[in-house]
Image (cartoon, rainbow, N blue to C red; front, side, top):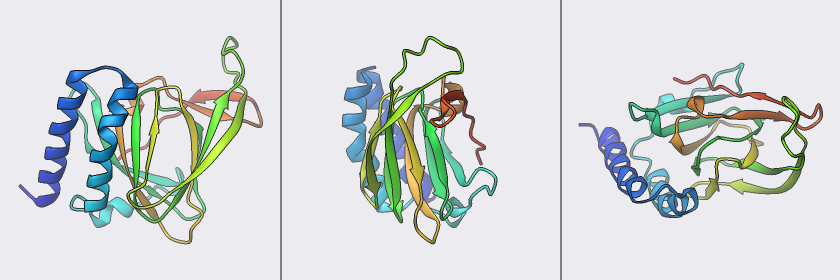
Length: 187
């Protein structure tokens, strides 16, 4: 087994132990965060292909692990310079750590009651620049957007309770006040 596969396998083993103990997303992200930070900083799993991005999407999503039932998905995310992801939720808990470069995360709050299909009002709440080893955590309904403001590809490590293409995940348009499905192109 290569060093990269061994590091991911050990990490996933620890994730399974934590998630078997509790289903509470707040407890899970608290316990998973130090593990994600350590793996991100070790870079033992990082490969040149993890810097590749989809030009249409503006970023690359490289699947490192996914359970057969789509739980516990681990990705390397690569962000093109000047690009990112629009406001979105994950529909599951998530922990993201910076690996190489920096990314600006903008956090949003939904202010409407969610009663109108396809309609959503969101408001900017705060921002956090995430660099190597820095962590940002999300609960299933947390909304954020991402932007790489640098002149080179940045990479981050993403860990989800469930593969995001198998959740009720939405993309929000704050100007049009709409929401719709948000599906990743994944390598």
